[in-house]
Image 1: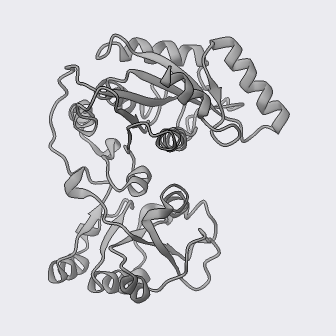
Image 2: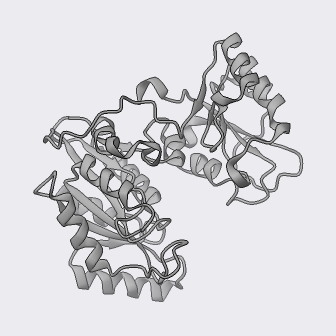
Length: 336
């Protein structure tokens, strides 16, 4: 949301990350929003490299950096003590600091004091800074696409970012709406719906995706799955608040076990589609399936393409792998 937007350009902090998985936030920002990045800062011994220009805090500040982004997720989401002098230096150099860590920057008194002295902001993107209101369920102008999933970690954020990029290339009026910490750091704004009190999820998502011009698309990052025993509540609130005109179902081909949920098999695609459409119809009677995005990373090329063709024949909607095939086929269908 506006009062919590990150100011570009960013200096992306990679710390001492040993691999790109640890630095996945930084990697995502560099991949999807390179125009917002001025450089990367790595500590001695870091092996992860997100391909940006190496800069110190002082060099980045001199080049115009406005936000120091913590682009990694250390174990436990804590803030290592050795980072503190770097964060203080960034604040004193005139930068805001943005973090997706579980630990709150605004809960670290030493940092708060420096931020107050320098007039800079500490932005905890896991902290929803929006008015907590209940959903209305009332229709609003504009068009909305929501990614839903068979499970967690199947590619909902990647897919929606890819669709947004494809729409931008075509000159379609579209906005990516981030709903998780990584998406917020990539886009520079959004709401972490998993940190919103459950009563207010739908209302907050209504605020995130307000009325717009009739030809404008909100491309909404999905979270969790209606079939996930831990996170279904977040997914349902998001579905109702989005009032999606179109859902896009994301699925990892070959996955049989729900993420970290022993004894819960991944549901059948048909059940996922039917349930999302049925429950989504509560706030949008015209909700429809716009396509399926398959994560085929576990398959070799021939098997992946065969699976895409099989699923497309079964459901009669465009089926893509955003990495292997791109998402043009889905956007083609939305433009019809």
